[in-house]
Length: 201
Image (cartoon, helix red, strand yellow):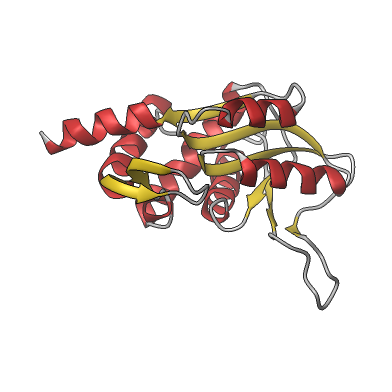
């Protein structure tokens, strides 16, 4: 595995330069902000996705978790889930004691055709899983994913996001829904803003 501090620093730089903009924005929550973070411009890039997967896999292991799978609400979680499962496969191939983590995606609503599933991919009742999202604002999408996983009989062992916007009530809502499972943000919005301004010189 690459050095985790170097991976995190490189990921922060990419988010700060590719995904962060200053201005006047209306958020999905209806609120207004002087900045916007679109992590998908980072996580859907080749190198940004690789770094995000490595950083999340390292954070999961650092927290002492060995989940069977990682999942989240489409579509912010999609590249994070794919890249973290890939990171786990590479780590496991190099060291069989490293946890191998499968993935699942949570639809915003159940399919109205086929098997009518809300969860695609890994879905095993009783399994310990972690939930992931790219940006936490109100925490609503993260909470939806947690509830869907529990409705499917899985146990939420941890919750992760790339960036916590530190909006009032967001972290508290996620932590309450997590029911004692740790909620870990790789970066705060303050971290990203500071790195953005530093990169601009």
